[in-house]
Image (cartoon, rainbow, N blue to C red; front, side, top):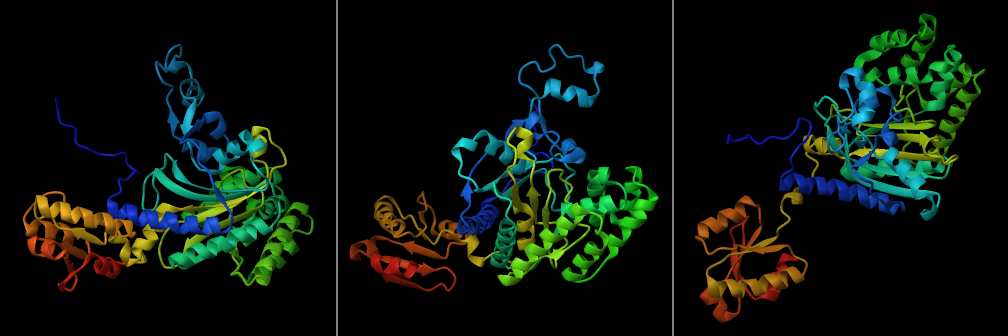
Length: 450
């Protein structure tokens, strides 16, 4: 039998203990802010029915869904040569791995509507999967940290998401810039350039402006049957620089004959006015911000880091019709997602992880033999009862080996107890950084470790 070299699929990763401790720091920091703003935790399954997922993310999102083959003889009664790959998929795969947490959340809300109190505020921190090309900051399996408010169309919810975002990145000490736009503004642009029916095509193309540039976006708009005349009218919106007020004035001037466009401008204005009143750092209006997902209908957000080359590390928006797809009408929601993987990479690159993350174990008791081991074990119990992370070396081994173990794990204190210490009912405490050591009773050691 040949030996198989161990490996994992591209775009996925193993996490060693130090990496996991850093990741837990991210999750715990974000969770603490979510809970402070009264969001409640839920979880949904890793897989969903494809009927739940398909058609919610736009054409590109549908292509990136991981499909799960039906169990058993999944080709039974199906001749693959009779179908295109698109027609074949629903015949051999009924389930898929979730692409994001928002669509499963909409399904959850509809399915459990009688058990929930609306407006319902939830947070969810789970992995999602996308059949994307792996590259820096982009993985096939990654965690999202989502919050959503559903059952309310109040713009106070958008303001709260801005507050939460500012607070999270302040806690991480990551400098960021937050951008805001409104899908109704983009609908207004589509309307005034004469292509209201092409709003989805326009959004999908404009959403790529940071990745492929303005020229390529214009080429894609042409391919999507947007006329050259219309593209010439869209381009000034790409290039307009100025304050939020100047951008709002420009949009008002252009949207004199677009009701939906003016509605988007009013919503942006109201959000920014509340931010001013509350002295919250307001996001910058970005007229080209589109967020390619089909389900957004109102405000849309995106957050990028300042000083680190990385895609967006947070994004979201308002959706009015998502639960309607599952049969529950008039249930507007708004949410935002924080990408744990990208936040990790930014914290790592900027050296912003707290120093103490790597040393969760405070003290190790060395093992000198059967009698000493029992004496040390009783002390370890009391140290742990005082809330201090402690361990005992499990085997009687050379002192050098045990000390190396402590050094390699970055454990700051070592406790030794041989015959002399036992006779005095005491212990020797060694500071591994300074090399200093003293004999103390256990109560004093616990105080020093605390």
